[in-house]
Amino acid sequence: MTLFKEIKKLLFTESFKYSAALLSSNAIAQIIGFVAYIFITRLYSQETFGEFNLFLSIAGILTLFTTGKYELATVIESSEKKRNALLQLNIFINTAVTIIASIVIIIGQRYSLFTDKVYFSKLLYFLPLFLFIGGLWQTMNYYFTSQKKYYNISVYNISQSLIGSLAKIFLGVKSFLHSGLLYGTFIGQIFGLILSFFKSGFVFSALKIDKKELKSVAKTYSNFPKYELPNELLNNLAGNLPILLLSFYFDMVQIGLFSLALSVGFRPINMFCNSIYQVLFKQISDKVTEKQSIKKDIYTFCKLCLVGISPFFIAFMFVSKPVFAFIFSAEWIEAGVYFRYMLPWLFCVVLVSSLAFIPDLFFKQKTAMNIEIIYVAVRVLALFAGIGLKSFEWAIIFYCGVSAIMLTVKLIWYFYLVHKYEQK
Image (cartoon, rainbow, N blue to C red):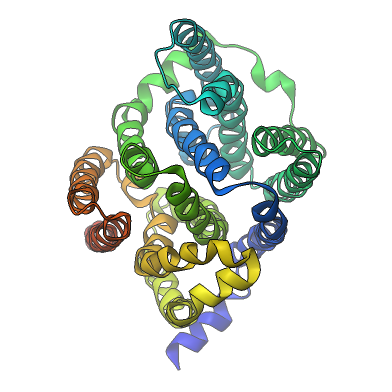
């Protein structure tokens, strides 16, 4: 009964209003993307899917360097002047990383240093542009969050999903069967960025450079590039390990099937986690600044996940194969098998990713990084166990199993940090 009272009270809070707004926009964006996959999986081959997702895995890891993770400090910082300085710092780092990546790609391609896969080799030329756009949105995403301008984030979510999905389908129909996925992604991201600035109230005077302030915020929040960046890098690397590592030992058809399972699994998960994370990060950060209790907020969220979300994961354990075959066609049925193995891991991701700001609030990034190192190590061992058995399926089972265990350990640590804060 107490839980229902907490839910009723939650419905009238400001955080619920913001969370609902972001969740609604993300839900629309993910539904659009999911519907688009019904057509995309019938236009593009499993091999193309695999190589495109290999590109996304590499790009996703390198995008972390485009801000040095200073964008997270934008939410914590209460001074408008310092927030603007952090915005400028993010843009400078993004530009520098893009230039360096361009030089490396040009030299690498000139001397054929990267890969002998012709299609994938061509994709790498677009990597610097992909990094710049990704870094710019990371910066603006958290800047909008610090201003509580969730409308602008919602506009980006919906527009990039809708325009990008339509572009991928159109290009696939027009026989751009190797480049359509990449071009469609670019088109969606660019239009999403442009549209998100409308009604943003963004004043370009915020970009007026103050070198002294830049140095000050870079030093104050140096823990973010020092510890949060390696931590996030390890986390992202671990999440992409199956595609990055298994692509050397198994064919791209299997990689493509698992890529679809990852996409379908993480689309709704990211929708939920990103929305909750952004709102809770701001809400809990303000409470910590004001020395208020945060225990009830954290525990209520976890209870709601257990009661409201876990039944869906249990249900999908039984229906994933026929659902994948029905929606994406029979040739993708194996992706449903991989999706079933992922479900315990995905549920742990819901809890842990939504609360991943907790180490940042208490400046425990170094400990978080050490935990992440162990996390990556055990996942690498899990994958190599499957490779040793020469079984792609067992590699995925081992990987998902140890991922769920390590995320549970991280969640227990988060509770410990909250408990210590409450004692003070």
